[in-house]
Image: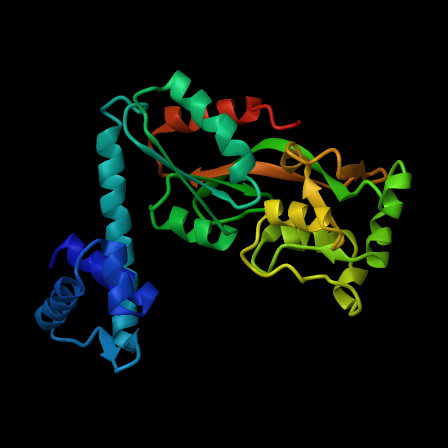
Length: 299
């Protein structure tokens, strides 16, 4: 039994497909399949139930996989502890951020981190909060940047900055005549939002609960996986208005699009850094905290 074999069964359990699991593990499908079969033979149990169209853990396999995850986590901690004897700013650091933060923070953060720690390679990734949460827990990422609230056992969080939300519209839109926007005004117009799965979408809907019940506007018309940049283009073509965090409005076409703040108290979000409490490279985390907090995010 090896750590590699344990990693194979954990990955296969998540992917439920030999081909995808093999890709995730950077091996061929036959290699992964043989390793899984070898482990099942060594344990004399069937870890997975296989069919022509799917693969899923057996009840006993579920317990074995859960234990394998614990073993892999402990092995990861051993490696991280070994790194503490080295320069904590010389090893690669894997950082993730949600889609509505990464494109606007990373261009500022990456060069500043490189300037202060040129030997520390920074690997970055953007995804949904749920995916980043799992990657942090599984050790695929060292730290993630998310919007609060965010809670996870044995994970530390520290606020980085706050930013207000603004309403984005064409300059010829009727709302452009106002100095500030009341949240309940959003129900009177075609509101363009991100797709399901984006936490920023949920935050916008919380501003005006009536939007959830409303059936005759375009709430949710932006398909899942779209970006804030896509929303800007849709606004520019006259499809409706949208709500953006302040950090995302820096590259608007000022000839076509304008923004208005919400009436006080203006809605906002708190962006935070999260990392495993067991992560031993405290100096690297401190560098992220200090650098991200000083990044110039406002246009």
